[in-house]
Length: 261
Image (cartoon, rainbow, N blue to C red):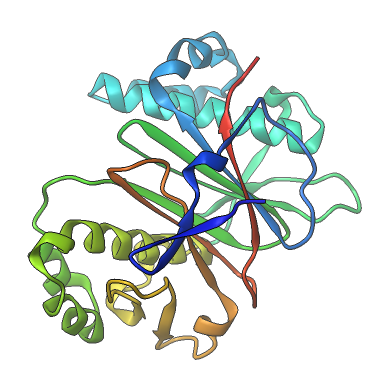
């Protein structure tokens, strides 16, 4: 189980506890598995398994204009099928996906009598990240720190309470705080399965430096703060990542580095 350390008062995954693992395993109730996949070492591995992807997924990868984007996408899509195959006891090429009403990808079927394996995927920079849990809605988002128009994005998309908190953030803390806040918001939307169909300013996450990640309110769901947990799961320095999971208490998070044999 992942342990948490304190960084500026905020609980975070101890990066020494990303256990190298080839995949599979049992998904137990009230536990979440979070995986990080380093893109560069897995490009050749994914290429060798490109045939596992259906034609529409291969076409989507081939439409990428930048080589690094195509490589990330290939590692993500092949890695997802391999990991799901391990959890379900199936060949990676046998995995069938479906799409929920608002566009969230889900498993098209699960073995009889088993809770559906919920999953979510995100990638940025050098990393692909995935989260899995049995029968529990979840979302994950990772962002590499980079120079963007942070103030404009906060003013245009964040809620009024978030904007007020942002105004109090010191300049040298703003890059970290912004991407932590952004991944909190994105992971929650992905967990809900609504994407940007739900306005980013319709709910508020904690932005204050030193405060634990949380949903403070949602104008469409007064119980969101009690029903959803946010967990920081950054893969390494220079990144922010958040797991959002629909559990009334802190989940037991196990963290793995994908290391195929």
